[in-house]
Image (cartoon, rainbow, N blue to C red):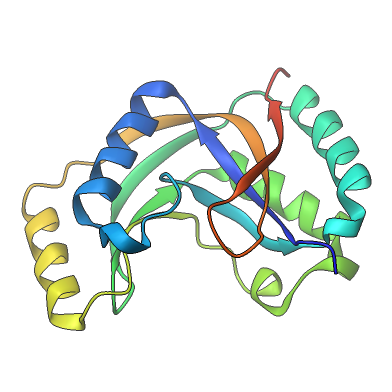
Length: 168
């Protein structure tokens, strides 16, 4: 069986550094196998990698870098995420979802709520505590998407499968 593919958004350097520092500070270290990311699709068919890559190359070449606003924090029950707002990103993802509708997993067919997870798989009281602490000093901030990043998922750290910079 071919490993599934994950599609994420790559950030501008300053935003990535900020997000990844939060993740390294708060994600359980033994489970933190990948850097901070915003997942667009969780499980695309690995067997379709050439077609997916071709679509992403065309899409990214035609699209300008999407702006994002990290507008608030969200409880994940056993973790905490930063909520991202971006009409451009929502439109881009919706177009890809329509094109790939026959390939989407149940998870990827659900509503898309863009976020970056900074903590997960902890006890609910620890997650509530972090949410309270981060909320107390939170100020919304702006970021920019710079590329679509495609990854192989083989059960451990993700393996890069392609990088598609926005250049529209």
